[in-house]
Amino acid sequence: MTDYAWHVHHDKLWEALDDTYQARCKYIERHKPRAEVALRLQLFKISRRLKLLVDDYYAKLKPVDDDYYAKRKLLVDDYYAKRKLLVDDYNAKRKLLDDDYNAKRKLLDDDYNAKRKLLDDDYNAKRKRVEAPIIRLHRRECPDCPWNGKTIFARRT
Ligand SMILES: [Zn+2]
Image (cartoon, rainbow, N blue to C red; front, side):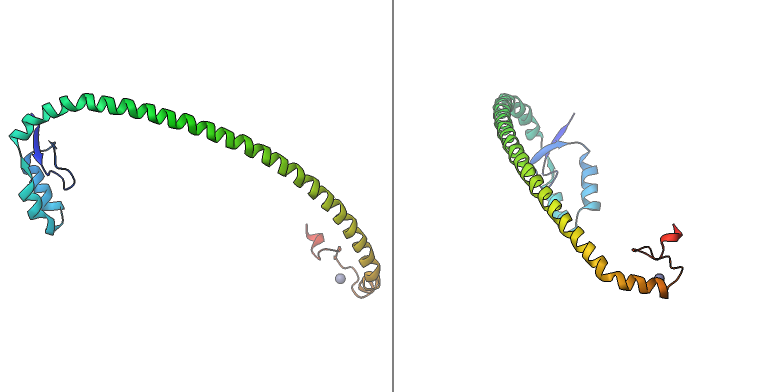
């Protein structure tokens, strides 16, 4: 038969004792901080009267628990149903916002990239003309050069 005791653990007033009284005392002495052992052992007591009250306690608590958990379930279900509506609304609005942004951003980027390419192509053509004398000099001073315009290691690959 299960025994009930006061202060089996420091954070509970009473509870069922899983182990024997002696085993719990031994555990406290071996594993709890030195400064706590005396108080823990002083307060830890098996109570026959507590045991008599426990059955009545659980019997009376049952309808209170049942009522609480039923009401809690209604509250939780209502909360998550309302939250889902909120989340769905948010996601729908956000998708519209994202789609609008992405469409406008694509137009802007396409226009920028097209104009940038024209500008860069024109610049590179002009730069090539300006650099032409240097390229010709390099051909004379560095014959059989692997330089391909970007790297001297072009032939290694
Ligand atoms: Zn070279």
